[in-house]
Length: 150
Figure 1 (spheres, rainbow, N blue to C red):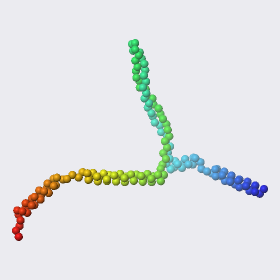
Figure 2: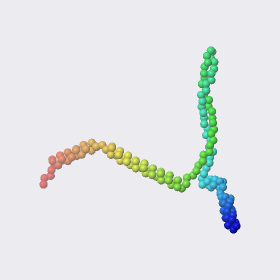
Figure 3: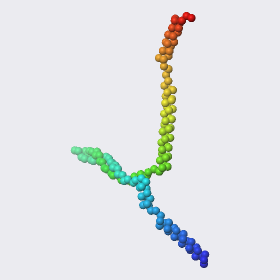
Figure 4: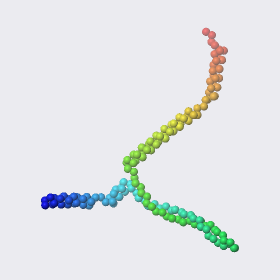
């Protein structure tokens, strides 16, 4: 009989521990208060939707039936709850890294575009070529005609 009482004692201890844990656990209100402290918001938002429909109304003019078009507008208010959950430190860090990497990629693309446009738009400067030719001809003429005698 001692084995049976020891099992009963062990099971009652386990049962009392489970009851103690369940009795002292945190409630949903506790978690909701903590979320509000950390920046959670639940806003009720209302939007107005305007619905326009076309109706036709028949009327009799002399001996024939005519139809008149009438535009009917109805407003409907839609309410819904929108929640804002703040980002964790890890999510903020990942978002910052993505923005930083995106800016680096854009910068690299801009540098490549600038370099290709710089190479593409190289035109020979004909005015500089003509000026160099003229200066060379004048120098040659001066050296031929005014050679100092040694």
